[in-house]
Image 1 (cartoon, protein in one colour):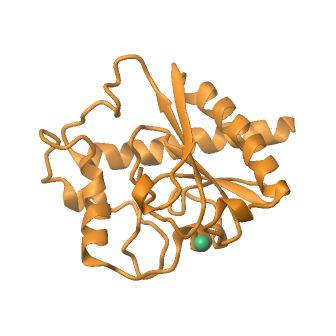
Image 2 (cartoon, rainbow, N blue to C red; image 1 turned 90 degrees about the horizontal axis):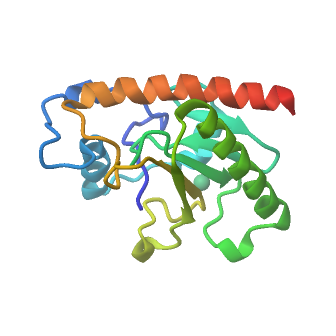
Length: 191
Ligand SMILES: [Zn+2]
C-alpha cells in the first residue's frame, strides 16, 4: 500500500488537513489520502520524508515515535487505519537484499515494540504487518524501505470507520500520536 508523500517544501508534514474539510467521506474510504494522491499526480519532486523527518525533533509534525540504533518508528500521515505505523532504517536504501543484519534484527525488535504500544493504547484485535517492495507491489515510497504495521479491529471493513469530515481525522491523527508517543516513551523507560 502506498504511504504518504508530503508536498511541503520543508519536507516536514504539517497537520493542515482542515482545508480539505469539504471532501466528504461518502465515496472515499480514506479521504485524507486525497492530498497524497494529488501530490503524486502532480509528480512533485521532494526529499525522501523517511530521511528528512528523523532530522527533526520528535513531534506530531514529523510523526516520529521511536528512535532505535539503526531503525525508527514513524506514523503514517495518510493511514489506512488509525494507528498505522512504519518501521524503517535510517539509511536511504531501496533494496531489501541490502538490508544489514543489524537493520533486519532491529526491525523485528521495533515491530514487537509497535505491537506493545498499539496494544496498550488502541486494543486492536489483529494486525497486518508487511513490506511493499516496488511500485508494482504498492510501494508509495519505493526508494526508502519501510515495513507497515496496520492495526485491525473486528468489523473495521478493511479500513478505519468512515468519518464525516477530514477535520475529525486530522485531530484523530494528532491525538493518536500523543497517546502512542506516551506508550513508546514508557516502554522505553522499562527498557
Ligand atoms: Zn530516504
